[in-house]
Image (cartoon, rainbow, N blue to C red; front, side, top):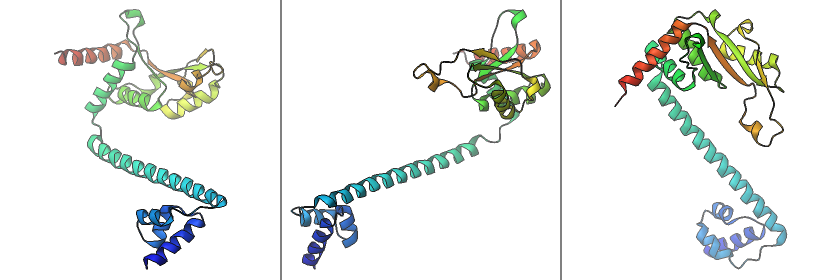
Length: 224
């Protein structure tokens, strides 16, 4: 029986099959295949088949690995969602204040105090807008948006994008700030947003003072 398997293994090797393929075909170990075909001179034309099979094997392994990673990520995301959703009003309260701590405009000058947060990520700005509406009880119509764009970005296209993403009407957008494009400078364009950055503004000094007051209270409560 072993002799027949050995002869078959040598025949398959001459046809350009890999050790793994031969082992799977004959239902034997790769070490046995290696011993049986070690002296087989594989024809040059058969090497192309071996190399192609190796490439396909690597590609399949890559796809399997990525699929497994995606499955694990989906499971983690599902567990995380169960842990944190639904958000309470207090959760949104803390989230909005801490967003302002990191991204918000702050000024000691009374004449220059306003609520303003800047980001290129619509999801972050949506959280803050919800915070203004649901926690600060601000009317959505009072919110203004100003875009900062490069000169090669269409203001109309950018305004439509941000209006759709933020749920803010286009008539609440101020004149955009246009700055020089760095698209022709190596690597600079890789770090920029396709639709620029958005400044979400609320010209209400009372709301501004509340946010800063809440933030100060959190800082003081965490003072070791």
